[in-house]
Image 1 (cartoon, helix red, strand yellow):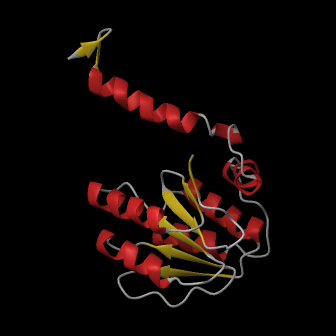
Image 2 (cartoon, rainbow, N blue to C red):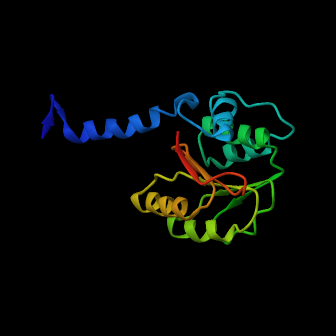
Length: 173
């Protein structure tokens, strides 16, 4: 079926893109924390110089994400002043310490369990490639629903902030 000469499925796909456009460059984001992240972290194309660049180097070396996403995650690390990071594969996650990023590269069946295991920390969980498959996307959505804080879906990764001062909000950038 076509609508104005374009297949209806393609038109519906364009509508989902419009839901992300409203947050482009921070427009329509009513959270000061997320607005600052968009402007000072996600919009930067170059690495913000910080004390550590180890996370960026390890992300690129492991080929976990592309260079642009690695720069964004390193900028997040430096901007928020995180003190450590860990990569989580198929094994369990240790309780996340305050100020730490846990990068999840696990199978979709373990995402929810590992997010639940994070506990009462003040760190952030980064789920790499939340849209790799329908099953992984559904697992990420269920984790966001159960999560009590702010979450950001940046297409290449999903960030879940475990901070009791941040309200329950979900942003698609």
